[in-house]
Length: 255
Image (tube, rainbow, N blue to C red; front, side):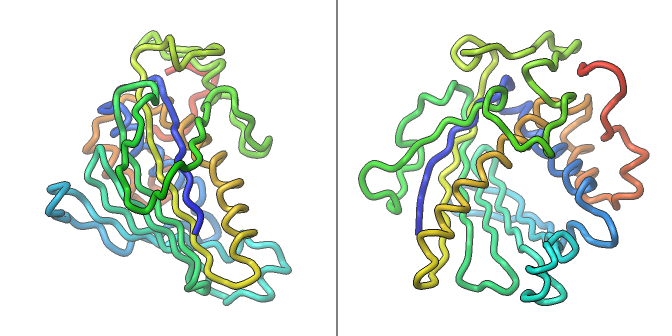
């Protein structure tokens, strides 16, 4: 297995992020739901942890069959999905991803959220970490993302909020912006297949960070909705969601 830590700062408080997280999950689910595929909610129920207290457990299936290239569809089952299990004890969460036809592959993510600029060391105190481990800061404004995922309305370098007076973000914003919070992620990738393990685990770590940066950009642009409303939106059918204020407004990148 390969373990790395990522730190993603955002110009929000941890409480604002809680609502933004629900909004992002909702919007991303609706954007990905097309041709009868998308996100299927299997479980959504309260969960009690002896250490972290009351929280919420969700299990979702992300159906991907139609999104695979033709060569991949030829060697995968007709029904192909990723299972996401999440334990939310905010500001601490656990997320686990497994694949329906690759039982030896998994991604395990521990996340802690704090109101600081990413300067907390040894925040996880995990016995899985032996000695020094790689720590990477991901910049939501200035790290490059693939062009096909770029949305100008979600670019923190140009986006400004009329409501809060925040933005746009400039070079060095993490040290000078208030408020600022950090999402600390300890990511464990495991693919126990001889001859492929190192290559696959490194590939997943290489390709996943930009996805987290894209979603973090979107969280900085959530509309004026309450936490309870955002949670409700995340489980609505995609067609109904089109009539709700989840779509980008025309005009400038402002909220």
